[in-house]
Amino acid sequence: MAVPVQEEGIPNTTVIPQSPIASEKLPIPRPISMGGEEEFRSVIRHASRLPLTLRNALCRDGVFIGNPGKVVALLEKMMTAGAERFQVVTDFDATLTRYHRDGKGCDSSYGVLETTTMFPPFYREEASKLCDYYYPIELDQSMSLEVKSQHMRDWWSKAHGFLMKTGLKAEWMGEMVRHSTVELRDGSLKLFELLENAGIPLLIFSAGIGDLIQEVLKQHGNFKPMIVANFLDFSEEGVVRGFQKELIHTFNKHEIFSHHQTDYFAKHEERRNVLVMGDMMGDLKMADGMRAKEDVLTVGFLNSKIQKCFPEYRDGFDIVLIDDQTHDIPISIVEAIINGAA
Image (cartoon, rainbow, N blue to C red; front, side, top):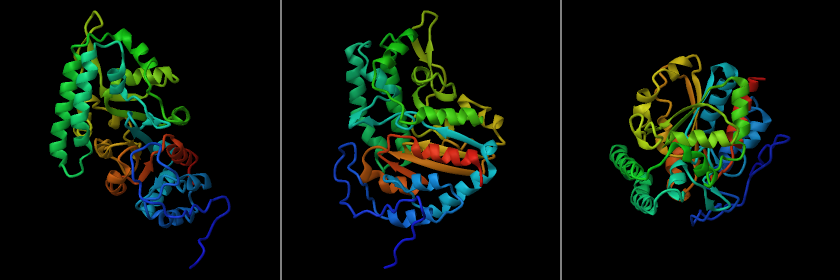
């Protein structure tokens, strides 16, 4: 058996095969082995046009690339085109934010609402019942997108109905976020700064609560990217009375974008290369509103139900990050594109 060629500085990450992931206990024990790692890592190691730091990052534990030849070709083209032709479109909950901290779940934007003590007890009870019923449907791979989409609409609509009965006030947002467990992934601020300093547009496209997303970003550096999400509508007295625009849920992002922000992609039409990041299969369609896109590189954060969901993520996303609570990989990609082809 031939010994794999190892370029200086790139670790040989061959590991003894591990048993399949047998439980949902987080964090997932390391090293993670889903099968086929050494094959794609060999391709990455030999992609000499990619920066060494990027190759190292893509060969680290917990990264899986189903079609490494495609990923290398996309990265090389994006590097050649440079930052002026590039933009980032990302989900928020469990993508920009942590899924867990040392095994303890972190709040999503809806989770902030579900855990706050500022709401009447009934809200948490009803929200929990809805989650218990609909979350397994959201992850059900046997169900068609059309059927799941209707279920998600029902879930969001019912949750919003209960929210209208809480008496939520706009002035509560800051305190609710401060007392929650919502947390940006490690490296998020560095990623935001890289994009901002290079003039690269960042679009956050979320089915979460836009007002809470803004508050989270405000409390972590006051970054102000474009956000398309479910924004609340408040009365003159500052009490919630509805939502500003049409409902966004997990599986209708590709249909709904133009109803919320009609000119964003047109404004950045020259930026035809895009990095798409998400944690759900529906996030793959977030850039569908780009009429002039050329190359799209997708990164999927696989946070839970690893064994069950891995095949679908492997086949859907270009790069899959398994239980990775950092933004190390997106940072390495953005840095390579900013620096361009050597």
